[in-house]
Image (cartoon, rainbow over all chains, first blue to last red; front, side):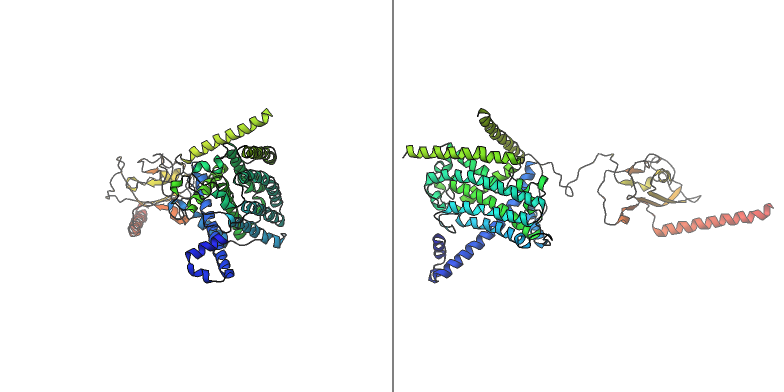
Length: 351
Length: 177
């Protein structure tokens, strides 16, 4: 909380006269609203971007009409349509859990934004266990997905939810293990501390540390994070051709929009963690580019990784369930264990 | 063990190849035709909307008879004895006032059979293809350039002539007997 309070009092000196509890509440509210606005706008932009990228990769044009320039307002129109749709809850569904599920999924993804470092000053809360916090909170989304799938009382939803749980639980392990290599290097769990330990030009970023081992760790993290956010080639929980829409088959209108929003927010979060842990967060690639503010670099790096996620989505077909488990347990997990060993020994030898 | 690493290597290489392909296609010009804004130009002799060059029509009604779905409706009135309606562009003499030449494109089956018998080649199909409307009646195309008043006048004249003819016949009959 301290850095963001300091940012507020620096911007408006009059605020420091308020009692601490009021100032903290105000700052937290404003930060939450800014983040929510960011998620909404980013999701609109990312959905539009995804449609354009998928279209151009298939030699099509994608949305071109709404809004004039290359259909930029298409997702706004779609969202308005979704918000105005009838809110349908199946008769045999568990109403409370059914309503709760999208809320949990979305609040989990907005909670992850708490520890993302946007710049030297702007981080909603610089926890000293930031990385641990984000890893644990992002696995909470499983509960929301399982809840939605179970409450829908629909075979496809249940299958999708169960697949999703199996997938996310197994891919948590390579994600955590590959991030442990980062922690071994930086020696801190605080997001801001991780960024600051990569000071210098781009060669001092963690991805180029102990080349090529940290690069492999980055690749492992990236693959596992794709599975974590249910993106192709790991989109079994919502595999259209087998499960209709997976765990959100029965959802429509506003609630569906929240699942969708959470999916794109999660894409940004995993990319932002990758950018923080491996690509130097808000640090510019060359130190003479320091005059460009941190959020630009942070957002740029995360957006590039989001683009790679979309790129992969439109390149690769979906994996089978056994292939999914094979990739996690027999390839990514042993590789990340070996990486931890190598990085620890290297660290010991160069001490 | 060797198999295991070979599989991983192949997976990475093939993914990279695939990503190369999709990245190249990101910059390939799209094949999409933005339809209402740009249209495909059809070949000159495409069988789309029917058109009648009414100046060349001699009112022979052969197209009407050829039409398998009866989408062409023609009304003609014979020209008077001393009336000269001119000739079609290929020299055929025009002997009829074509007071009505309606084509119902909602019935047309685009068989092109009406265009072959036409002695002056005045009915033909054009490459124009988007003529969808909100009302089916708008698909009836009127080609005749006679105004309703002219048609009325011609009809009255024809009726008078017929009556005169009938009178003359009935007038003659008693004399013959």
